[in-house]
Image (cartoon, rainbow, N blue to C red; front, side):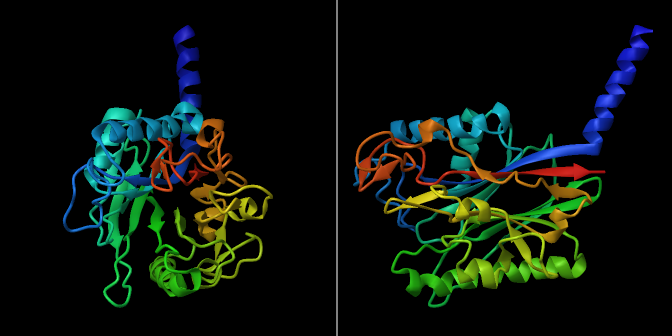
Length: 333
């Protein structure tokens, strides 16, 4: 009789899990995760032991430990199921972070991008939780032989249903916001073209876009070119919902601080397919920034800013100049 009760209880748990699986998805610009060796093909020479940042093996190991402290604490100390990263020099660094410091045995999708600084985007996932179907790297064709990070696309599968995840790090505002705006619009157009191809095949496709877009939710690249809108209730076919808009509108919140003001440049954007009740579903209100008190600088000129690794060329030993953003995706059978 006891065995029968245990079996029924186990089947009930399995049934609940299969009917309502949740995936904790995160993006984080980790601020300059470099090795200590100069790559003559990229502009990384400052991140060596003898150059301006005095970037040593000890400092690299400290960086690993601090990133892991944040990542491992997410999702109720389980770590994310899917994790996007930006500003990582190469795949070997990401794999070293996973092997030596993270709780989960993530698989890594990453390759050397054409970016002049040599930094990449990476997409990590737990293969015990979700299966990868395919992936690709999407180049952004900037004019004048300018180079930037590729967009990483991963297509994941549950029971034959796909979740498309895109990790982005669009061109920065270095050189002037107006002067660099065409670069970010081109990045948005490149991503939009790929989104349209997916939606042409399946208008209800489940698509999750995360990344440091270096623009705010109301900037043209995001709001107009990508068509990521502020509310989920009045979308026309093809438009997306920018679920980070409530953070953008909230007083004193953001993902990045500039001149004492919080701004949102790290986004979580979802397709209309993630807003319906079929298969993968974005959980309403689940998008937020991940913030613990230790992630903010406590004193000095930059008190209240994200506790970053370097400021003004001085080593602070912090985490990153960005806060992670996350959301929860539920899967319905």
